[in-house]
Image 1: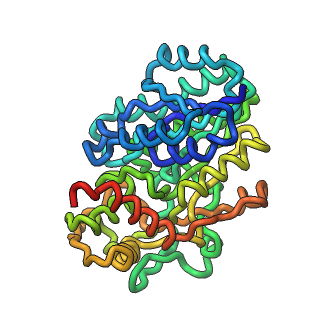
Image 2: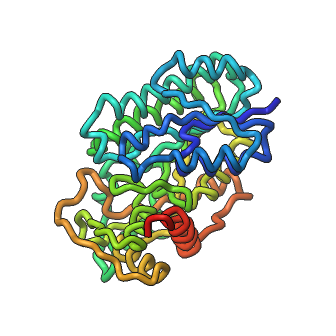
Length: 357
């Protein structure tokens, strides 16, 4: 039997992976205890997505385990053993604002939980491919010291800079920078995943995500900016822009395109390798540009306010350079541009909110 094990399986990337891998593996086992609801309240609950997966995929099995607890994980790994061919670790505490409230919880989930998953994989299915969803926050606020230029709707990097054409590559330093508590815990996990590849020779891969998005995101104010923004466009709830004149830029990758990157890596893994993963120059926007797009798609004028206080350690401009991944896996490319992705988010959100609007 060939099994894919997915943590955070009811979240955005985890649920996309379940759907993607359901016809490629005999069994997909998901681990998710809905801690997102603890982090972000009712807006963040993934219970609806867990139920959707259970109904949609007959070869999906769910386990409500806490990745911080080795004993709970060991039960699962002992049950399936070497039949596990892929471990996709997407579970995380994903907000750098929230992390400062409970650093022990944040580090426990992001760093200790990742170490637990690595060690269970090494002990029970060492030949499996282990893929980790890291974050561009491992670079801290180093991107903010690039030569940036203010335009009418966005910040942009100087046209003469090497990063202008394709964005920020994997050689940007992780040191001498403010990461946020969240960023620091993800650095610890990121480096450990690399080390299990380089030291133990395991098939590990690290994907440093930009803005990950898609129609199955449980967006909340503190995480999932495009999803939550569209929700506010539909409901009329007030949205708050934090700093940088609303011109801060993010690249945005559809969850399907990201999981397709994982699939390419799985078929030809490079132990301990690191890749930036985002929309690159293909799909990116500023906050002001995202608001305009939400208004166009929803047909509603957005209700938003501006706060001069930016989030500590937040990026002013970040666009991922995917050149290395595309060189290693030339069969991969983006499928969904920003407008298509946002249209899907709108359709999904309208459906989910139908009983309340």
